[in-house]
Length: 309
Image (tube, rainbow, N blue to C red):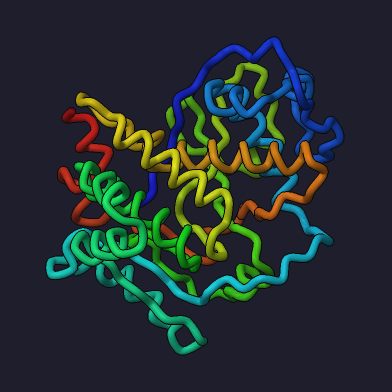
């Protein structure tokens, strides 16, 4: 299913401190207030505005070349999901099939639906995670949750069903074993997505720009700490939900993944270790999300479904 955008926003910066974000960020230099923003793991989880500013800093830092070496392998397996494999819309199937080009370049492609995803989760994780998957009432949530399970266990290359491969060189995405995620930025003032490269260079003293990462694509080795943390948090949130509207973003989607990434990066920085993640600023050169598609006009679109809750 398709990715999603936008996080909850606006919160005061915390008064207490344990670590300060580095001030020398070149092109991506933060406003003075952001450079002085101090973070703890709890701040990242609870304070949306401070997390956004730290995500902005991470996007600048983790999109640059690095001399650190990570030599584990990322499986060359493309993973996709559509809830009902017997009834994939023709336009969606065309998007998904664009990735078959990589099958001739050493990749295998695995397509899961509700039944096969549930079977995988049950066999690999057991009853607790299966119950969490069953509690996902919209296909987009099941897609979100399944990709966390699959990638935490096996690693690989998850891509949404509506992304169309552009035929470009994929090898930079697999040059080492870092987790790779796409940067996103949402402007609350205009209710539009913004190019993260432009947003990082912009003056955001008004605090209207929300920086975060998408959960599409996800390119990762098995067992990456960010995926494990995101899966643990999502499982706990799903099983603790007692009724009422579901916040897909923060429970299973990009919001949950952004929290896990930021906490992991903060921990690595505090311990003096390089952050084993690359933030992608040019994913659109590899794949483009097709628009429009037939499913976007009805309740299969999580945005329309959410508005009906």
